[in-house]
Length: 183
Image (cartoon, rainbow, N blue to C red; front, side, top):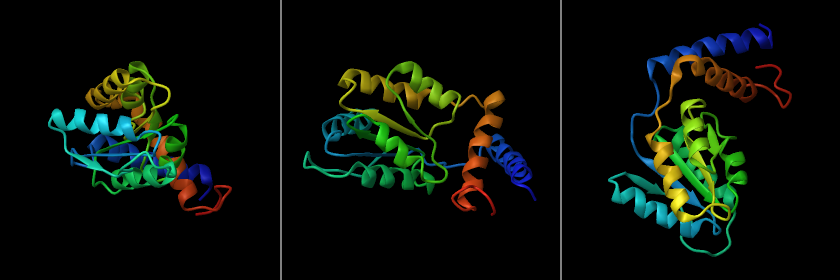
């Protein structure tokens, strides 16, 4: 089977899964941050809990210097395993955490910096991990982004096939060598 045939097969399978609504049923949110995002993470934890959300804190627990990949990976792992439906990671710019989280199969992490990107990442891309840059957005905007992101439903329709293609590419490389061949 060629790589193109394999991608088409996986796309069809994933579209079926997506349309069936298969995925994490828990409503829990995993949240983590490095030292640069610690204060904003703490504020968001309080905000989410005050709204009755179940939140799992993946750390860090202070402003002492740590490495963002550790916390982005911890959050992404919980989402990919289905233990949490969503994940939120905060670091200085949000970029590195998005890169790390997107290495975990099953995760679609999106760096959002306003309400429009929050809506779009959920509605169009079915994002399940949100990354934020604490050094780039204020507290009020961060709360608004989180609220908008969590409130926005995925609009499968025409987007389902595109999300399925993202998953197909991911699966192709997960079972292949560095060049995406084989499997």
